[in-house]
Image (cartoon, rainbow, N blue to C red; front, top):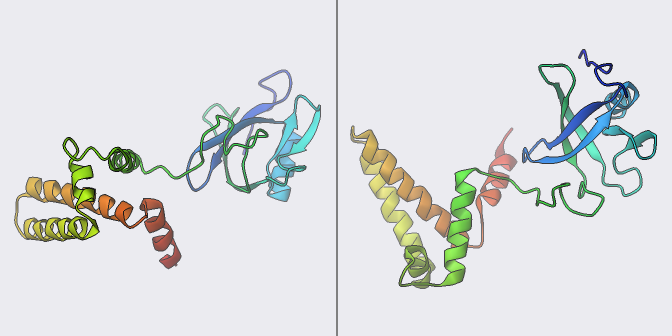
Length: 199
């Protein structure tokens, strides 16, 4: 890895810290050659602290270390992307990230859907919300709806109309997300189960 530590007068390069699992950005630090070498050697992310004017291994006092997973160099050879497995919160103020965000998995639009379902169930507006009205009928009704959508998806899978197959698949997935929440689970729990089976 040919890092251009001489590009800036202080001999430092930015190091973007990303959770290797969630892909969330946790913090930004700076490394000089010595910090980079120590990070590679110890597998614990070490920065050059401009405040302390010395090497600083993240978590050396708190225990909230960053275990090195991978390092990538950008196209200009002057910025590092460091993927880590964090132990505990990353920010010195106690939050998961230095942007005061929760370091939870994000499944893109599926996470948005999970949040919408959660909000509509909490609001209990059964007249305006299909989700709330279905939850109000109980878990058996939610489970029955998943079964119906599954049958419709299978029927369309055996046909040649891909548009209808995708439509029914979307219905199935949406109602499955509802069923997960009705049982007190989320996609994060399904991911954990699948990971436990992966060899």
